[in-house]
Figure 1 (cartoon, helix red, strand yellow):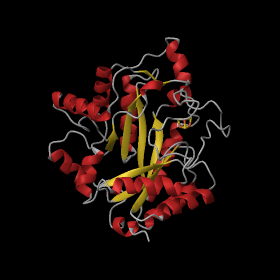
Figure 2 (cartoon, rainbow, N blue to C red; figure 1 turned 135 degrees about the vertical axis):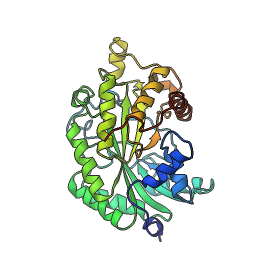
Figure 3 (cartoon, rainbow, N blue to C red; figure 1 turned 45 degrees about the horizontal axis):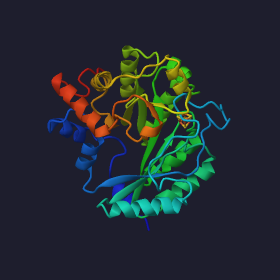
Length: 332
Ligand code: SF4
């Protein structure tokens, strides 16, 4: 029987600001997810990525077939062997839980990763989520999805899990808060969809980790800082920040070879992430500042190494050089 709910029951379903304050007090300049978790829990956690076979409404014809211009036509590459639809969901979860328990990890989230993982009927989703939460030592789920695919009925189901003591995360593809750029990217949703999801999740105790891309075509420095401020004002819980990566077999690749888009160089990216963090609320948890899971064989640009710990170190050094830290330029 799963005892995960009891374990998490008394924890808050929002970020604990006192813990974040302790991170800064300990001399860190960024509210890093790993530091936060270490201070909040006396056990290690791991997100088990699973492929439940979801498509994307922006590719399967529900709203469009083009997809986002940076998304590979054959789907996003995934490097984790057991996150694969060729294995049953049971095998994907059990195998990865076992592998990670051997490394001393105590509790798990099931992370529904490839595709738009709320693109289905509420009944089908509930069945899947119930199943994922039924495993021993699973304390929550994380669901990768788009902002226009989280209707009230689906949010109600998730809210119910929060009430039962589970930790529920939405990994939300945001990219930018500017409609002009969202149109250019062919995202097929608006910034209002993002606002609605953030407000609804906050009301229901569902945690949101937004995915943001810096260096999008035609986005000025001011626009990126506005995105940082808007998400802070909406009290988003966490962020994954990425550079725009040009991958083979995407529309962006065609734009790149025509010479109409140039990637940021490493120094520009590190400066930009530092600026973005300065304009962000100090209480937004930072899960990543790079994207290191793109295989080299399909990465066209940038040429520099995307290794996330290396980039995180460089950003920390840049903030230290400025005598600054996350949130230093954020005003509510
Ligand atoms: S919403 Fe996600 S999966 Fe769908 S086309 Fe865009 S990047 Fe790809």
